[in-house]
Amino acid sequence: MSDLSISLETLALEQLEAIGSRLTKSRKLILSALEASAKPLTVTQIAKFSNKIAISSMYRNLNVLEKASLVTKIVNENDFAFYELDEHVLGHHHHLRCVRCGTVMDVELAEEIEQQLHKTAKSISKKYKFKNVEHFLDFAGACSKCES
Amino acid sequence: MSDLSISLETLALEQLEAIGSRLTKSRKLILSALEASAKPLTVTQIAKFSNKIAISSMYRNLNVLEKASLVTKIVNENDFAFYELDEHVLGHHHHLRCVRCGTVMDVELAEEIEQQLHKTAKSISKKYKFKNVEHFLDFAGACSKCES
DNA sequence: TTCGGTGCAAAGGGTTTGCATTCAC
DNA sequence: GTGAATGCAAACCCTTTGCACCGAA
Image (tube, rainbow over all chains, first blue to last red):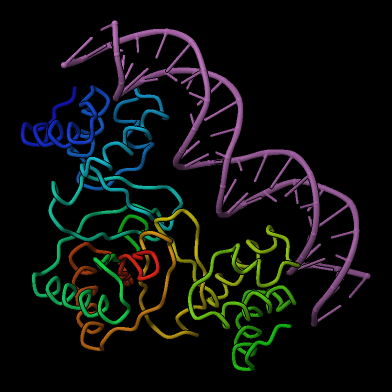
């Protein structure tokens, strides 16, 4: 149980402490579920991974972990949220979503595109007078399982 | 009431008929609200524009209009959906969202980036065996109103 | 011993649905 | 006249909250 990598555990301790929170068993379990998964998970999926945590605690913990910049919430067209480790942990990346089953997977892009997106964000920031403009680039299509 | 442009009304009639639905007064009102607005609207905002429509009909109509490819639902981090006219009507574009107040506005990008995104979508399609991969590029930051 | 964390149950809030009525073709 | 659309209220479902209890520093 809670086979959390040392590096993530250290980071978690540090960043949770920074917001006055503790690294509890439940939070370790959630983090290890997310670390073990190749792709973002729904609350229900995380709960399956460890059904000892009450759903309410699940949500409360995910909110705390989000505040600690350890976890990121992904809003999806399919009405339930997905969660994954924060970009500080996972590295910058994008998402590919199946329009049928809703599964979300992580995708990395070429540096070239990233740079261009960065430039674009800057020019939008200037043009529309928005501060700290970030880009969110996702892709969606029909996955091979759903297509069969 | 329902000062819908002729071209949109024609298109609406056509595409609603294609899915066996009618162009009713309520649907005209919703479409004209969206056409009049410079930016995507929430259900509540559309309702304000015309408070004669029951909320339930609002949702039902928006779903029908979405099926008819007349309207697109935008999922937002701030927990309520935004709606706007479909890209077939509005043209391809992207969104800029305020992380504070949640407002969403439309943004057009240079052809150069669009082409690169298109290429990227294709290569992702091949790599992950997803069909009909589309891109969704949004930007988010703090708008000038919220920043003051 | 002191707070933060947890479980349970109840409440929230946006969205959907059942049903009888009304409307469009 | 017939099937689609509407209004109202109730149901849904994911998520949040209140409260008493538990647990780690």
